[in-house]
Amino acid sequence: MSSDDESHARGLRRLRRYTFFTLIGSGPLSLFMSASFLASSDMDPTVLPLAAGAVVGSVVFCTSALALHWHGEGMWRRRIFWGLGAALLVAGAAVEASTHQIGDAWAAPAGLLVAEVTLWAPRGKRARALMTGSACAVALVAVLASAGLMARESVLMAMVLVAVVAATPVCQLWHYQVALDLEEARGLAAKLAVAEERLRFAGELHDIQGGNLQAITLKAQVARRLLDRDPGRAAEEIHAVEELARTALKDTREVVGGYRKVALTDEIDSAARILKSAGVQATVPDEAPTLDADTEKLLGLLVREATTNLIRHAEPTAANVSIVEVDAQITVTVTNNGAPEPTDGGHGLSMLVERFGEAGGKVEHEHDGDRFVLKGTLPKAPAPMQPLRPLRIGPRPRRAVRR
Image (cartoon, rainbow, N blue to C red; front, side, top):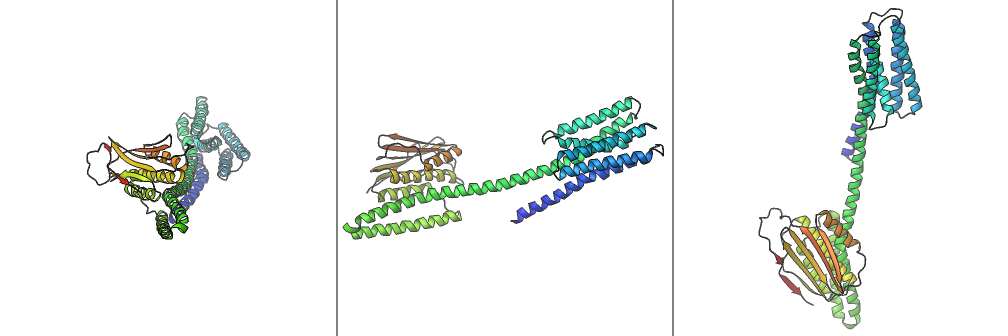
């Protein structure tokens, strides 16, 4: 576990302890407020112990129900405790009403009862349940006040105490649940980042090694055919295979280290060398425009994928790579003959379509007889740290690479 993970776990444990003590502490706090009201009241001394016992019992039962909620216990036990707490609250208030107006000592225990009822509601509806429960408690006090059983000032006291006592544990539990959700989201984000990195690595490995391995296969086939007829030429081809293998190994290490950069000019030069080795007459641009890194990477991947597919699936004699800049867009087109019958696009083309789409561009391909055209278009962004220059309209100068 990393230091950040340990810090998050430690903070979550502290928040859990704080939430638990806040939740359970709402009981003693309510009891203290009720005791303060009872101590300052002029209730009959013979009734006071009964009222105090009812307050204590109601608070204990309701706090126990909140503790069961914290530990994830079943609903039926919580409802039994809540019912006992409510019964004691009503009995104590009735005892007080028999000799005296009902005082404000019952507001805090009533808030605990409202808090427990609120937690019965599903997440997302508890704010409404809290407001409804508090409003019902205040309405009951207003009815009792209008009947002369409570002082009119008790309505205002109930509005404050019931809402505050009820909201304290509910909001604290909500805060803790939000922290849990954020921690879960953070863990999910970390897993997604790992999965994304694996996909990126797989894509980079496919992009970089596809052409190298195809060229190695081609060179090995040529060397095998020339082994008996022209040993000297076969030795040259085997040496070329060795060099290609070294390049492939170097590229693999760079991919693993994250240092491999795809440049459009390098990919065009690599395509020219591979096509020449395959005996294909190729025409490629003399130079590539200066582009931002992301655009160069995508266009370079398109040239690489087209070259790999051309060697692997077609039997071309000629190929053409062109670059056209029009307005704020740049298009790279790879054309070859000797294409086989059209088939469903492979993984490489699907990957290109997805990547170009994410960058605001598009990839098109079409068959015309034995002619295959692959075209990729991207919005052209100014290269970093480069002065702006006029766009060149039309195809770039091209150079011929002959057998």
